[in-house]
Amino acid sequence: MKNLLAVVLIVFFAVPVSADTWCQWSGTEGTDCKSDRDGVFRTPFPTRSEATINEHGYYRLVVTQPTLGENQVRDEEVWAFEDNVITKTWTVRDLTAQEINEREAGAMPLSEYYLWKVLRLKNVVTTQELQDNLPEELKDAYLARKALLGD
Image (tube, rainbow, N blue to C red; front, side):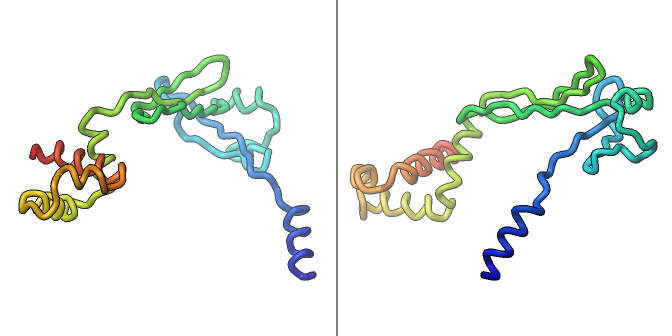
């Protein structure tokens, strides 16, 4: 019963966390950003009016996260200021072959790569047996390590 009461109290008194962020525009990016978590922009002036906030040089910040593909990564920040709104997003670029290999090689530590390499070189296990028995993730990691080391 205590647990049920605690859950009910948490549900009723939980406050959703959302707050606007306001920044000044430097000409190239947002600076001196402040969160308005209480719904009243208090510093340096108490107000609820967006126009009043804009008059003091602060503008609403809208952050847009880019959608990334499997082999893409966020790159450079892009700031813009239009219609009294500052926007921030990022450019997206494709991963290089080396970055993809480094990501895939992470599943196999370097010491494990050399262990498999020695077992293969000493004919304890053949390349075909490795291909038939290793999980796909480890095969990819082995080949990525091999490409990174130039073996």
